[in-house]
Length: 192
Ligand code: ADP
Ligand code: MG
Ligand code: MG
Image 1 (spheres, helix red, strand yellow):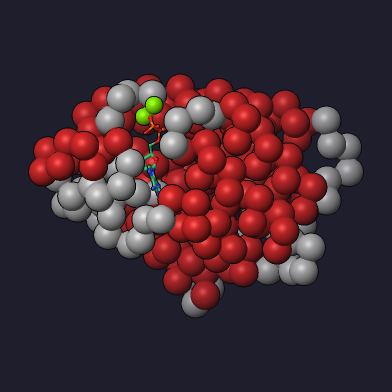
Image 2 (cartoon, helix red, strand yellow; image 1 turned 90 degrees about the vertical axis):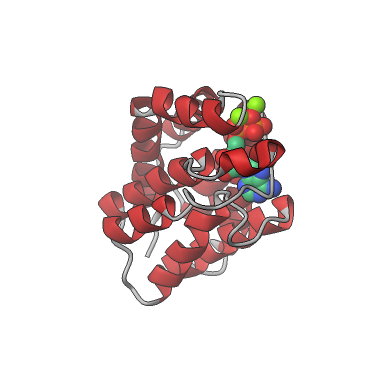
């Protein structure tokens, strides 16, 4: 169950992981995109942290909504509206349920609705979809997350900037899949 306190701890942990791996995320994006994914996410999650630190008594839907608004307004790039849609859908769903599986599934639907990518297109969807399946079986582990992220390597990008390099995207990790991996490692650490 995602309580408000746990949601806040989750997102603060995510922010710390993004700051720690900022250069790595931008390097991954340099290989198949424009090299800004680390700085985009660092700026966005810093804004999430600023918003969350203002909330004294965290309530799940409010925490998720504040995260969504910070990510939409501060990330810039494709990933901002995509993560933003995920958190906005989670915030809406949190008014009905705080079940982790249902919340993350709603987030995935938000990303798919906004970005029109499906599994196998080499995007963050390739992390989110297997994570939703694992959560349904109550089996989300760091190993499952790593496996999903690594599985983006052999794929050819069909959506976003990486699709411009076509065949050259084969063999590289998708940066958004990797940053989403940090989101779910943080979930395992703080919530599950
Ligand atoms: P930009 O590509 O605008 O510079 P970022 O570098 O911050 O934005 O984010 C790139 C990441 O966004 C990709 O690695 C991919 O995971 C994700 N992405 C791009 N387009 C889509 C899409 N249509 N659906 C889902 N994820 C996408
Ligand atoms: Mg980029
Ligand atoms: Mg960019």
